[in-house]
Image (tube, rainbow, N blue to C red):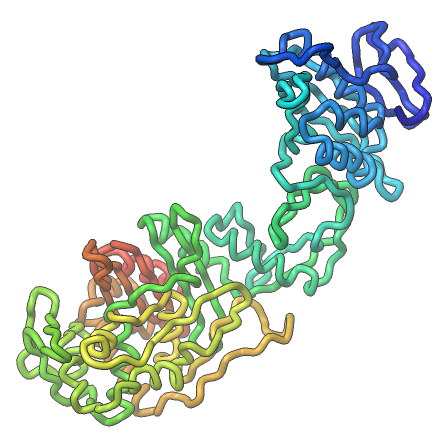
Length: 540
């Protein structure tokens, strides 16, 4: 054992103190800690350890650990290599300067114990106390009673591959605030938690502040967050200013709370600044920014812009809306097979007539037309660097029936609420502004720019058509409670033959929002109320 042992009586029990370092373990009076090296069997034992073996093995292991004899402690386990490193690190890497370990009453082969320690780092000492436990098993090859080594023996929160460490955390404490300076926390805005955590990991060091010092659990997986157990020195928080808006975020959190598997994003058309991100999902997935599902008729914003851009349609000109239209060997229908004899293109858009769009394909004569419009004008597929992980929308070049399906947001097209909110923002302003959660100046990351702006005549017609949708089209009921200059587009997307995903997007003055509710029905059924709530909050 390291150092010379000396004993003192403390409260009727024996405390071993080694080398003057203050390490110790409570044991029964009269036990010789220095000589504790385990309970060796003269013949190979079988079966579960007895009560006596359990008590003795636990006592010897805890004594060796507390006295600093890491090799002796490790040899009393069934994984000596891992145990020796972990127990040695308890002093060397976790900076435990003093420890008293008190065994409790065994329960079968499980022995609870209490650790009362002190952690000393750079002149600061703080107490650390916790309860843990160990189990005693029979060694397979030796038959000896051994401690079943698990990281949780050292500390109950340790998992496989994790280690106790002391030092400066990976980043300084960060206080995230909205664009007005109001603090944003995961406690107040639960669905924003993963986004705030990612922003902190990415930009905490760039936002200034001082890390401080702490005892923490180092994760087994690189890049995973550290878990602080004991703060030794308070850091100076950095302030990370985001483009989020606390009022709009609060409304988004409340709105998605009404619908399972729902997501919403709000952006500012004039800047691309993301004002709110919210999800209500069992899996915790940030579908608002990372999802990839067919957007349904919300895609008609891009299709309409392409048709107007190429002079194949005009808001006030007829657009034949029949019950069904065939293309590429596939027949397309409207909801409940409705038709609008003599309807204008604006009315067909407002009423979400699928066939009015399908029948335009023959005039376009360019399979890549929709993909070009999406990329060149709406910035889809330009590798957006929003500040956190996000997934770009995809509008593949296809032909035949798949190309027709893409005209109405089906087929191979995928989007998420961030993408669709940006579509609406681009239509509203006439210019694509890449969505941003935090300023690009924080890290100098590139910001995507579309090849061209929307033609003024196209923007004017597209916005008027979205206004018509909000006033007398499929979004009229939902948008009636929203004030300001407003427009919208509804959508539903069939997925795997189940209830369709509900999509809805709209704008009110200088705010655009989009929501998706998986298997939520038609656009106005579930996603519509979510968007309306967010837009109302933005104008309050």
